[in-house]
Image (cartoon, rainbow, N blue to C red; front, side, top):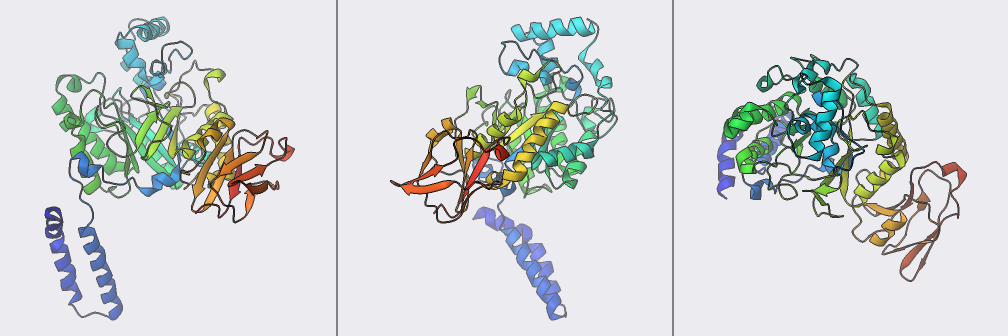
Length: 489
């Protein structure tokens, strides 16, 4: 009640001004418009005010557009795109194969991975070449944001997340807090974040930014955390929000300090209450070493890992899996074809994640000259071709709570939308499919095919029969979708 009273006191001057205007003689139609405006302002007075504590902040729902979108593109691009190297084919763990961690692995002796990076660097660049020397070589001379945005649109993705600043501290926009360590002062001499944001939004896609809370070797961070947070980090995040109006703020690098030390709760309270994107912005769960999978907005998994442990199949909260097409997020020049997921494997990954109620944020690593590697373009366009035909089984769908989970091993997945059930096949079935718990009362079809599935009901189950072999006209599909209209309660 105290919060509501404070909200009314805040809104009272607005209400009084509108009420005074209504008393001025005016036509009936104009008066109606003012009364409508009065109602809108009154409603805004009772909007949720989020306090800087997790109990309050966690009550904010994830904006609905995210739950409808299902598929996004992650982009790791920065100074690390110049060396573009990590030992992709060595048995050193998942994280040690991230090329974007080049500087850290080079400088920090954590064992086996450090030796690989150090040996490579000395052999390739010599002992006098320091990491900062890569920055002028990050030129992005072929970067065409409109071309990138077109590829993303054709991929079927509905949102894009760019690394505005990775752990190396180099920003892709002219940040006042990163003088001479940003893409306008050095390297490309261009506002990469702004240019891409404009192009992506022009395609009707949602645009967001990744932002690393910490910076490996920033002297202010390593010597005075509070000053770093107040005078560097918070100012940068507010600048990003104010400049580019992002739909997503995807933080990372939170694990060295608590959310109290990062002042994350105070920032999120500002973001949700006062910022220009307060009603639409999506945030994740990386706000302090205690928050991942517990607090914030969407919960995030990474190569199916949460805090180095395998993620559960299903989490009762909006979830997003992020991973690269290969073993790294940033571009890695030594990855070969065997390191990359096939187009079919990527479509299957998307299907599996969406059927479990998750989104997929699939990463690409552009080259330092601003090109998206052709193999990555091919994978994205293949996914887009499949989604163009079958997207209704992915976008704006929900998890089917009663799905028979044992069918996953047979390549059979389910999504739902209102009363419609989608049965998605990643393998062509060699036998009948039995699905309990549905009552097909409407049309049954295989999307984009003249094939009429044979459907009958027996023993409380729906039994589906398909041809014994894949018909030639659909044999090149990456997956197949059977649509049951009016099958769910």
